[in-house]
Amino acid sequence: MTLAIMGAMPEEIAPILEKLGEYKTTKYAGNTYYEANYKGIQLVIAYSKIGKVFSTLTATTMCEHFGATKLLFSGVAGAISPKLKVGDLIVATKLAQHDLDITAFGHPFGYVPEGSIYVEADKELLALSKEVALEMGKSVQEGIIATGDQFVADEERKNWIGEIFHADALEMEGASVAVVCDALHVPFFILRAISDAADMDASFSFDEFLETSAVESAEFVMKMVDKIVR
Ligand code: SAH
Image (tube, rainbow, N blue to C red):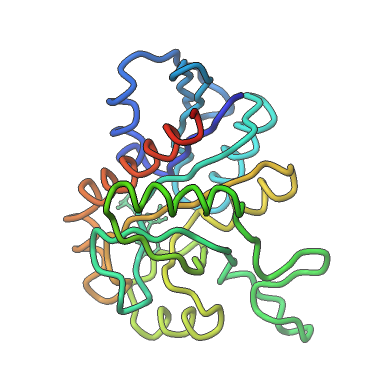
């Protein structure tokens, strides 16, 4: 089995590479992919670069070129739900693209013909994450994640995304990864640790908490990997 672990930024996969220690490095389509043997399975790890397009390319490459049969995403996000504080973990039950808009033709936000507003994450991986949370003694919130090519640092925009998509957190890669995995029938899991509240202080909060939140997320994802291996 080949398991993909993906992030958007170097900081999001650094803690995972650090834990592995040894890996093979391959350059492909403008990104670096790290392959390692881990407890009897193959891991392929990469950061995509920020946004929906780069994350689509990386997710597709991991599945089609490296043969990944499951994909776990680890990273940081802005909180919409007031219940989510910096460092808290959110597991996506389903994801939507908040910047996809052909409403001029009477379609709802986030929808294009032959697509769907939401893509649902894999139920088995969600169940596994509950076990991991219990074992780690961590409270992990499940919720909807909205994705768009925009760093949201604006209360009004954040609230709009919250209302229209019932989203609890927002980021810039999850839904595109979800679309790829869904189309290729690759079970996926999107985990995010909160780095900011997507408000006017978001960029400062992000800079301050990126590394610590990325570690929170990476540690949880590696526990997921350990569960999958068993
Ligand atoms: N500081 C970076 C840019 C970070 S963009 C630079 O200068 O290069 C934000 C990244 O973190 C994206 O990968 C996104 O998925 C996530 N993210 C965290 N908070 C976010 C927010 N408020 N809005 C959108 N994405 C956010």
